[in-house]
Image 1 (tube, helix red, strand yellow):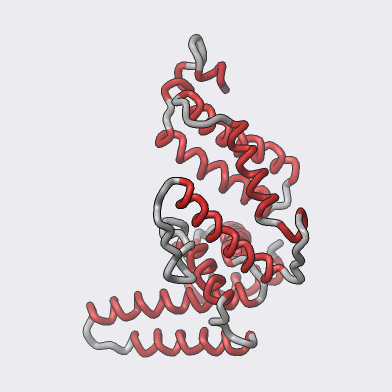
Image 2 (tube, helix red, strand yellow):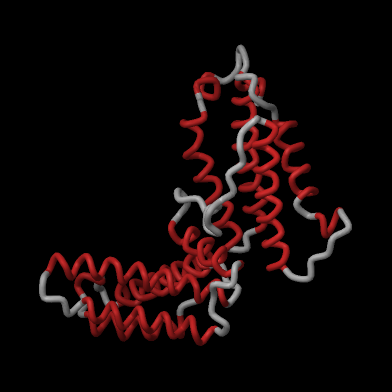
Length: 261
């Protein structure tokens, strides 16, 4: 990468900066996730290499500006992982994954305090248990992290039945919003209630130990397969979906749930 970015290197690589490379970082990350979802480990090996290239690219650009090197990146994560796992590399104990996560947050807060002291700044502890959740991440992940953080401090249901009751409650509120006579008010209320319903569904996934993004991607995959099966059956009849009735497509959809792979 240093040669690609250096004198006599690749014109394209030399022109790139932190902003122009960001989209590739996101693209490669999603391709890694897709390979994992498909359990295509041959593909995953290559996609992880592509993702690693992004780390190298950003590190080299930083090195070009005299900020840090790839060695500094590796040293930083090595040090952090040892420091934040005292139950492995130290003398403390952790009996559950939840305890590890709570201690992780405590260690992060202590690191921020020490960092502030080193730079002569007054440390201001986060005023909320949710303060560490970024606002610019995908909404589904943000909802998962927000509810998980709330759970760490005891704000959670005791049983899954409570979560499912909440999902049903939000569904009822959405049905009620649909009865609003004013169109603009109805639209705003429905938007709020759909958001609440999605948030409740994310809580259900989290409570069951499921990662909602992966669960939704799996559902998306099933929909793709079943709809493709439906289209194929219609094509055998010389028809397209737009030329078919809803009843006809619904009948095929129900068959696809049993026959589509």
